[in-house]
Each structure stands twice: as structure tokens, then as C-alpha cells.
Length: 330
Image 1: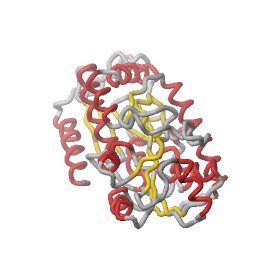
Image 2 (image 1 turned 90 degrees about the vertical axis):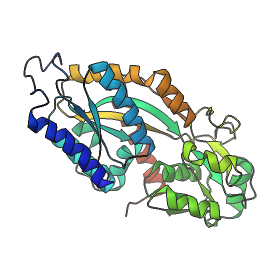
Image 3 (image 1 turned 30 degrees about the horizontal axis):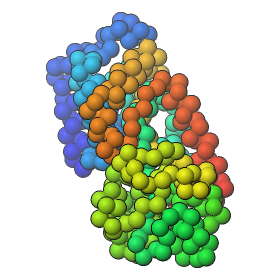
Image 4 (image 1 turned 180 degrees about the horizontal axis):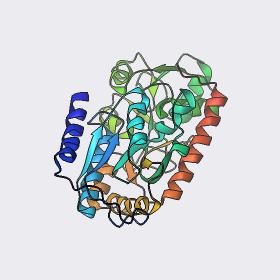
């Protein structure tokens, strides 16, 4: 995967060096009138092929069409997004480098040492998606509703294992939020990714999890996993018969992952505003909406200020959950 990322970046850098990309224009930096005058790079902190990568590529195509310039996705996974954040932070503040982040990018520094404060060290551009999770259990668990599952947890404290893609992931945090809301106890089993986690979940070694909707639909439809509730505040078109936690009688369990764009800290507001406007339009295109809805996600439109407020609220929410649950990073 690293080779793939370096090839993409190499092509981008080579074009600059060869002079096939016009040099940056100095005029009107405050208005963004000359923007963009060369390819724009969107750094993605995960490997190609995942949900974030798919959204980034679809968005880049449409931004390229809107601005009449190439938008290139540069995958830089590693170190809990630190590799990608290093690149974004060191890039020129001219709008030609963006980075896509998720809710996990905000949660991770609350548990692990980080060189960056996302709210302080970068400029928010726009939130572009919102997508939830679904509580699933192995068929061996004698619970066909959230109420029955909560009762089962109370009768069998710490005997139910729930998996996640790692400590601090929103899959993990969803489980902790359910424990807090219901006064129950489960044992968290973190994995390095949901690939291995699914194998143990479907095999029955782990009894529950909160995977993404798109990655779990096949297991749910085949009966290998049982869906009990979705984590957004409203039902999801991809799983129309599965209730929300509130509908199932449990208040306070609302978890929505999201993707959004940030830029180097001193990027001119005028450029950020232009990108945000076009990103909003792109995410509302019929093609993007159809793709997102099929994956249990939805497009989001908003201003840079609204995205900043959302990230701040997410930081405060998960800080409280981490403190209440006593979660510690490795």
C-alpha cells in the first residue's frame, strides 16, 4: 500500500519539478482569485480501498471538474494519522494541500500522545459525510432486541466480549457508551482492524460489535450476525427495519462517524470558503448521494465555522466518555 501512495505522490512531485504544472501565482492570496493554479493534493490517512478513500476519490473528481484543475488523492497511512498530519502541517498554506479526516482523528489525541491539536493546528474546511454503526451480535447470543441484550448483559456481567478496530475507535467508543447508558459490563477486545475482528465475531469467539453498516450488511442479510440497533439518531435507509437505540428504549447512545476536509492552519479564509462551497455541491450530486446512501452514510453540507463547532463538540463528548469509562491508550 505504501508503494501505491509513493507512486501517486511521485507523479505529483515530478510534474511540479518538470514544470508541467504552472508555478504558484502570488497575486490575490487573500481572495483566492488565482486558486487553484496547479494540482491539489488531498492526503488520506488510510490505505486505498476503504470508505474514506472512496469518498475522497469521488469528491476529488468533482472538485477537479468544478475548479478545472486536477485533485489527486495521496494515501499516507500510519501512526494513527500522524504520518498524514505531518504532511498536511508542513505543506504550504495555499489551498493546494488538503487532508481528509474522520471522527477518530479527533478522538485519537485524547488517548495517545500527538504533536497536533486538530482544533488549533489546522483550518477546518467542511464536513462532507455522516455515517453510523450498528450493534450486531452473534446468533448464539439469546437476544433479539436491545432490551433483551441489556438484560443478558446484566445477568452475565463481563462475559460478553465485544470487538473493535482498536482502542479509541468509534466502534470501541460505541460499546463504552452503551455500557455507560445501561450500567452494564462487557469486555472490550481490540483488534488491529475489522478484518480479523469479523472472523472471530462470525465464528462466535466474540459475541458483539458495532461495525460500520456497509461492512456488516452482508453478514446481517445472511443471518450470520443479528442487528439490534443503529447508532445514528434516525433510522438508516440501508437497514430500514433496524431501530435506533432511542426507539429501542436506550437513551444517550448516538454515535455518528464522519469525514471532513482540513487544510494547513494559515490557509486564506477565501480559499477555504471556495473549497467548502464546491465540496458541498459535490456531495449533493446524485452520484455521490446514491453511493453514500447505499453504504449507510449521507452527505453533509455546511460552513467551515460549522465544521469547527462540530469538531469541538465531538472533542468534548468523547473526552467525557473516556473519563467516565476510564479508557486508557496503550
